[in-house]
Length: 311
Image (cartoon, rainbow, N blue to C red; front, side, top):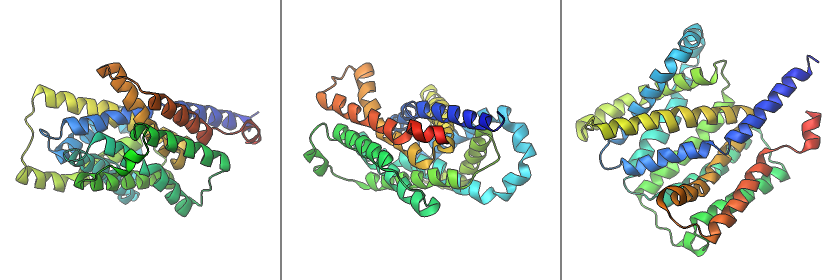
């Protein structure tokens, strides 16, 4: 009975992680939308610093005791936290905001879809992780559905896409996100989800401080009006605490390769949000794309009943 309890708990945690797999892309989509919206009036490094400093401050009351008790372990792994903060909060924060000035939302979605492929390659190189035929099938279906939506049902449209400097920045951010996802699993921590996110967020702020000083001297600072404060608050709560906490949970219980599949859902959700909020019409390719992505994610992340029973 005692031996079965951890297995039951792990099974339930995986089920929760599978549900979050379909929720997290909505949270991340907010960050991409605001990256485009704020490109003209909030400097990118400042926006990233305020976002992650706010995340740290909000999480602190819930994990300050744990952070203090684990201070020696955190200090021992300080370099790892700085690397994770630089990748996840620096490159995937400030660089994405800077890229929003020159690239389009369509290109951001398409280029970021490289991340799951890079995650699979890195997981294989660092973990020796192998992909089953079932996982490969699900990944291919999800990728095909995502590309169909991005191309608006016309595959030839992919060849007509033009890339600008911001696209290269997004490509770098996509690769950084892949490495962040793999290292998050590669470097396990005794900290809880909130405490670990708070430590990584603070590390990210520390990494960004020299760049913030340079930006303030060259570009200037943003005007702290109501609009700016509302945007920062949204970034802190939704794609900050919400998206990264759920992504960390998914990575812990499903692994980085499966967690990376959330990026395939972004085009689906973007289309649905445009339909609900902007009144845009859904075309046939939206439905076909969703019909490929959603089952693909399920196939790639769920275990066959026979295999689950043996676990």
